[in-house]
Amino acid sequence: MTKKIGIAGCGALGRIVAKSLTQGLDGYRLIGISDLTPAPFNVPMMSFAELAEASDIVIECLPAAAVPALASEVLSRGKILMAISSAALMIYPEIFDMAQASKGRILIPSGAIAGLDGIMALGVHGIETALIASTKPPKGFTGAPWVVQHKIELNLITEKTLIFAGSAREAALAFPANVNVAATLSLAGIGPDKTKVEVWADPAAPGNSHEMTVKGKHSTLHLRVDNTPDPANPKSSLLAGYSLISCLKKLNQSVTVF
Image (cartoon, rainbow, N blue to C red; front, top):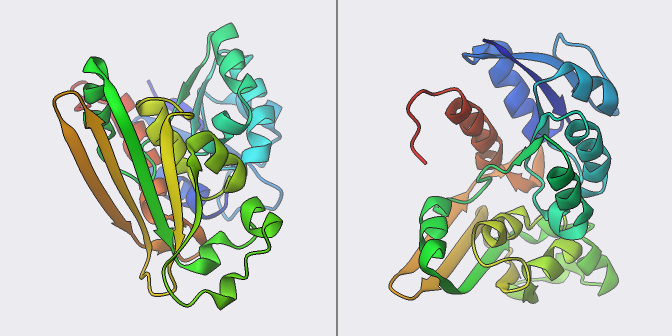
């Protein structure tokens, strides 16, 4: 049975998914898009409510501030929300309450990192510490609340510089468009208050990189991912868009590797 897909937010990541769906993705059909501006795909533009009503799965590619409104429409109808903006769950914990009170589900893809399968397996026996250090070119942090609040002159950074250190929950508030990777790691591991985050600005960085160290009682995982920034949005990596497509494919397979 073909599932109907709606996309909320058709910026850089949303367009990756929309393009894949319109080119043909077995078991799925793109039926609508919700965005402030028209998208170059031959499907209707819809409100959040219309999209949630018409879709089996709604894929979220929005600014964090818009996620609660979408989640309310999708979950109240018992539908599936595939959310790439996992930082929104740190900023707006009421989204968890919406999910628990509904028959719907929230699916969170791996986004711009890897190794979550191993981290979740490690969590079965107990994770002691988790740290993620994210490094991006300075322009990737333009407009972030932490940068604005602390009047960080990104254009004056000439060497790799630590601009933030704190918990994943604090990082989500400080960099809502930059640290979905940290939020996702925290949800897979020991939670947003115990997961530690470092944010680095490096003018020599060729792209966006994430280094994770997760220690358990019997294993330590060291993971590094180097991503090419999305040309349309340097705050995001192309891998994040591909992870949404991968998640859809997993849902439609009779044999799935987790």
